[in-house]
Amino acid sequence: MPAGIDSGDTAWLLAATALVLLMTPGLALFYGGMVRSKSVLNMLMMSFVAIAVVTVVWLAIGYSLAFAPDTGLGLIGGLDHLGMHGIGPKSVTGHIPTALFAAFQLTFAILTVSLISGAIADRARFGAWVAFAALWTLLVYVPVAHWVFAPGGWILDRLGALDFAGGTVVEVNCGASGLALALVLGPRLGFGKEAMRPHSLPLVILGAGLLWFGWFGFNAGSAVAADGKAAMALLNTQAAGCTGLLGWLLVEKRRDAHATTLGAASGAVAGLVAITPSCGSVGIWGALAIGLAAGVVCSYAVNWKFRFGYDDSLDVVGVHLVAGVIGTLLIGFFATSAMTDGPAGLFSGGGAGQLLKQLVAVLATGAYAFLVSYALGKIIDKVMGFRADPDHERAGLDLTVHAETAYDHGVLGHGTVGRRDVVGAGVPGAAHVTPRHRTDEEPGD
Image (cartoon, helix red, strand yellow):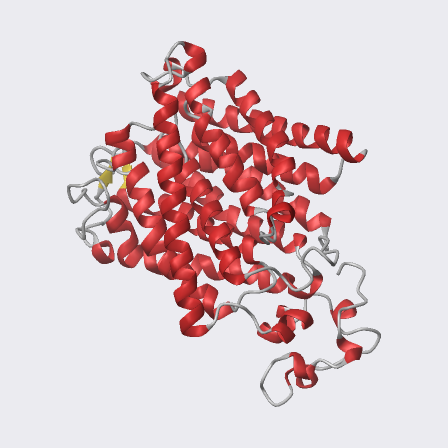
């Protein structure tokens, strides 16, 4: 083993990397269950294609710009590792192989891109999404990752804001970007007029469970060591996920008289999102409070889209942006010097200075992500069209884009049809879907 590598830390980060990668298939199931049955495969594909696209961009140039030595302004890294140049079996970052560190950070980028897809579910062109995923990784994720995670990044080293596992890099970043894309594409056909219920709550719960499982690697793995900080991050993650779930259900029970499975899944995710930036900065009671705050606030925030008229299909804004902001800001209240080895929040006698730093980090990340994502969405829409054809949207993107259906008995009605009948002359589209094959009467729709 090369000098400087700790076998225990390396073994833990290998496991954590696999856990975080599993979160993207988990997210695909979570999102897939939340959409209508006629577009579930398209939703799954948006996450799975992100794994491939982001990996290529990251290995080609993304990792170098994010984690190579800073160019001097705290804004971006250099090209030292272009194409992973200079990274081999003997390369070491801290106490782990550099290749492993790069792979671990890659899984964060993949998940962040995939999260954005929930804001534009049911109505985006698949090719446009692929282009957006590649460009967004390079233009938005990579710079923000450098600001927050890399030595020399201005948020980490110059501002001094705390973000243990990605409240700004992942949650605020994807939430602000999702809002921008939702505005670019406009609302789904029938938004606010037709019921658009989740077609499979069991898939939603399964996806949420996989996300929760993977989140231990996401947060505890960010210690980049098998130590006490990782253990506390893991325990805080569990605590916040539980209080987020309970907080959401309490609101549902009081407001709607029913505690729902969708609410349980959403509340757990909200709590897990909120503890992401703070899991390495707060004690257990802080984690419980942060999760509870996220569960309660996000249960109301998901309805903002109806009040303000933007169609965030699967509540990327209402859960990830809002909970990410909550978790990042509450570090300024609940941070303890025992966890941070220095900075403390208001409740630990640290004053308002840390809270101000957290606020600046949130505003800078959110503003940058929103503006660049909006411009990028507009450019792609102008060049190749981002919004799906209305007929395709009505018929369902599974059939019209991928020439497949998740549930033949639901999409094809009472009869059966072969692939040749669906594809016709080789041009998949709504014109080949006869009224007998439409999904309008499907209960889940």
